[in-house]
Amino acid sequence: MPFAIFMLTFSAFGIGTSEYIIMGLLSEIAEDLNITIPQAGSLVTMYAMGVVVGGPVLAILTMKLSRKIALLSLMFMFIIGNILCALSTSYYFLMVARVLAALCHGTFFGIASVVAAGMVDENKKSQAIALVFMGVSLANILGVPVGTHIGEQFGWRATFWLVSAIGVLSVLALLKFIPSNLPMPSGDIIGEFKILKHRRVFIPLILSVLTSASLFTIFTYIDPILQKVTMVNKATVVKILFWIGAGLSIGTLTGGKLGDKSLIKSLISIMFLIVIIQIIMLFVNTKIMPMIATLFAWSITGFAICPMLQVLVVEQAKGAPNLASTFNQSSFNLGNAIGAKYGGLLIHYGIAYKNLSVYAAIIMIIAIILTLYFRHYIKHRKTS
Image (cartoon, rainbow, N blue to C red; front, side):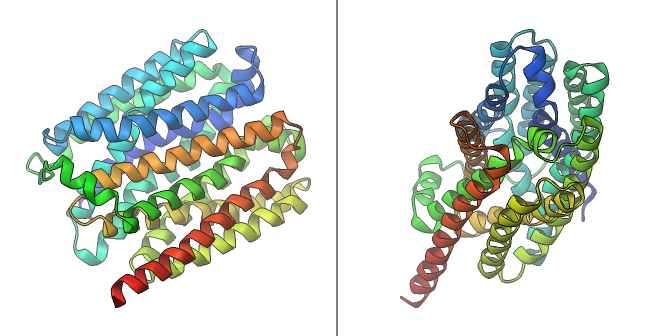
């Protein structure tokens, strides 16, 4: 793989740490800002909505820029947003800062995915995209546990200073190693939007929303689930987050390889596995070792889906890869927002933390039904 792709991975590591670190600090932020856990969970929702809005808008605004300048500009926005998070003294200031940090997210991953895929041969595209997303997995292995530990020891604001520093290093890495002569997008905005409205593109985007919503119904509240249901202390939560991160990394690599083979068949199989694991979680969430094993398996299957759906969207949106890839990131994060809000509402109306995985499984079952329909649609379309 070209070394430049690894620099995109490092930048993705910073963005992933910023996105997911809230899950490890939910209790600390709620206590410090005198808000409830569901209110703190809304910080996840608002970050995701920032991605949803920022992705398409910034994709259009950066279309005339060189890919290198676009990536650098997005990382500068990321740094400013996280510095403001570190300076936050109130819930609403933090929420606005999180939205600002999120605006660059979808467009960065959209451009980075297309850039990475364009640097390799056709049979390596899924693996190149998976390598970019490996940065997010590494964020969960290293960034989130380390950031959670730093937040516990020095206050949650210290974690955002660390994330800001990672952003600065990312800018320097991109500046040095990303080529300046990367192919520009077509610039035909209307043409790209017309492609996105086709059912073959729209359905995979909906699948990204549904799968992400299912996963984030649990992931957003993983800190209180582990402390209140599994009854572990904060230090153990940090260790469990490490194992979840390890599972995410394995899943990303696995999904990248599966995405280069029987894409839709593999996607359906993994969705079924997630449903089974989420149901198992209901029966083991009070026992520490079975719960860790289940979360590890859940994280592998959950993140195997991401590169596969990214490839599916780009494949189906021939002629609009940049915008489609960015819209898919917005779809993932719309799912994040829905999952976080859905979980928060369930908690608010009396559903116990231990039962969240069952409600998450319901969403994944809907995704399976839609994927089966999509497979039938694609086969019928090819035949006709």
